Length: 114
Image 1 (tube, helix red, strand yellow):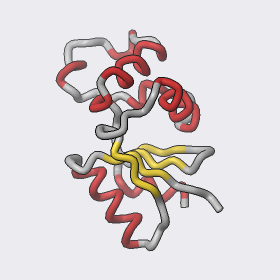
Image 2 (image 1 turned 135 degrees about the horizontal axis):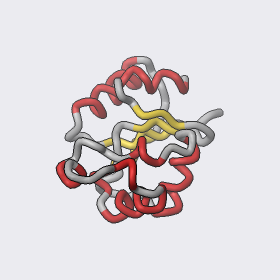
Image 3 (image 1 turned 120 degrees about the vertical axis):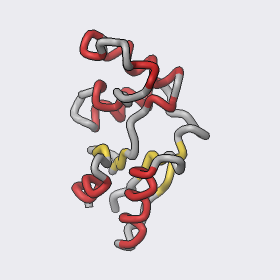
Image 4 (image 1 turned 180 degrees about the horizontal axis):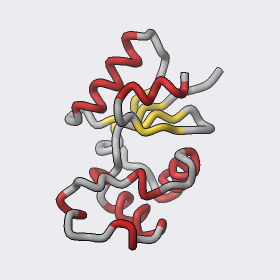
């Protein structure tokens, strides 16, 4: 049986929508409130691999911290280090099945893993 984990920020409307969507479909999943239990650098690396090795997709580009930074110039290591240091920079929601992960933007994208 596949174990699903939703990386969730309850203050984010898209994250709440993804949670509600999965719940309404009766999907069994764990919730990881990553602001309360931040991902380690190793967990971020694994998650990036499950997202297709595109660490740049994991970074919240619209965050005020990055508005004046050319994100395309950041290395994978710089992106993962930034998220590890400041978990609020992680794009959300993310649903992970242990082999693949998807970013729930739009929230319906999480249904790809079902």
